[in-house]
Structures are given as C-alpha cells and as structure tokens.
Image (cartoon, rainbow, N blue to C red; front, side):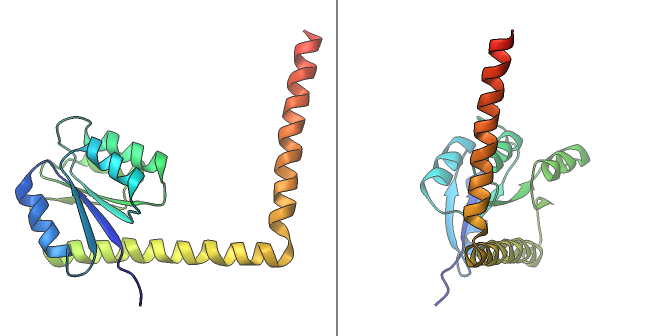
Length: 167
C-alpha cells in the first residue's frame, strides 16, 4: 500500500485553513499551522511533502517562511495561496522556489490539479535520486566521489596554510 503524502496548510485565518483541510483530507495526510513559526517547527518535526502557504500572516511574512522552508528542505514543494495577490509577490515566490501561486478564492479542481502536479514532480525526483544512488553503488561512483571531495577539502586546507605562511 502506498502511503499518503503529507500536506501542511499554513494560514492565519481559520476559515480558509479548515476549508482547505476538509477538501484535501480524503486524499492526503493534512497538518495545519496558523503562522510561519509553527510551520517551520512542524517541518523540522514531521515529514512534509508540500506546504500551502499564505503570504500575509502575523509574525514572519509568507515570503520569508518560503525562503526558510527552501533553505532547510529544498525538496518540500510550496504552493503560495494568498488573498492579496500581486505580480511582484508571484514573481518573488516563484524565484524563491514556490511551485505555483494561487489567489483566493480558488477553484477546488484547480488546487487539486496543482497539488497533484507538484507531488508528481516530487515523486519523479525521488525516483531519479534512488536510481542515481543505485547506479552509483553499482559502479562504485559514490566512493570515488567521496574521495574527490576529501581531496579538494584537504587541498583547500593546505592552500590556506600556505597562504597564511607566505604573508
């Protein structure tokens, strides 16, 4: 049996947060957070696949929360859902890693399609990473790459030492 993906809904307004939860609950495991601070804590504690993120919230702005999510776990898909949409916020969101941008009120089938597309992309990336890992193990590439990384790290340290002695 395939386990359900987990979606975190981040919105300071209880109405939209609970409505979206009811819509998504039959298809996904759903968690909720009323602000960015709680959302960032939950991402540290739970396996989250996708975040729906409101932009205007008390505490850290949704744009800042997006940056921190992507910094901590770039594999989490983030869908911005806002009642205060603008071209600038849409461009900023996409530039910082959001998979899409919706303006409230939204069409239910539209959000389901966007989420399915984002999670489908995530699944394909996971499968590709698994495949590359298997290929690397089969041909011994992982060990060789680690050797190369170690060599360059040691080389940087030697270069720093030589530079400090020559000054």
